[in-house]
Length: 57
Image (cartoon, rainbow, N blue to C red; front, top):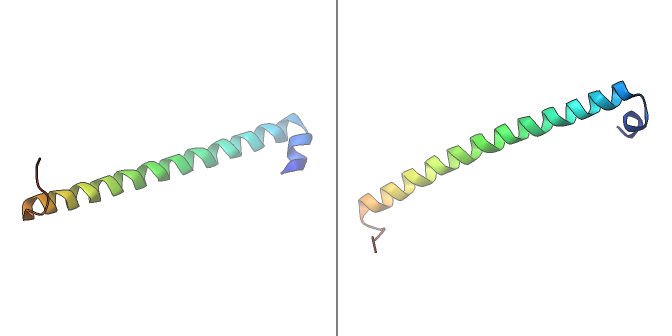
């Protein structure tokens, strides 16, 4: 990877493009995971509230 940074501009461009794609995929996965965790947390809180274990102040 270091050779591509000191090599031709084409390799540098491809390296930057590959890095950008990795970041985009990682962000998409993180967003999906965060949404799923949020949905599960909402369902659990609703169940606790329905069962009367979660008091409203």
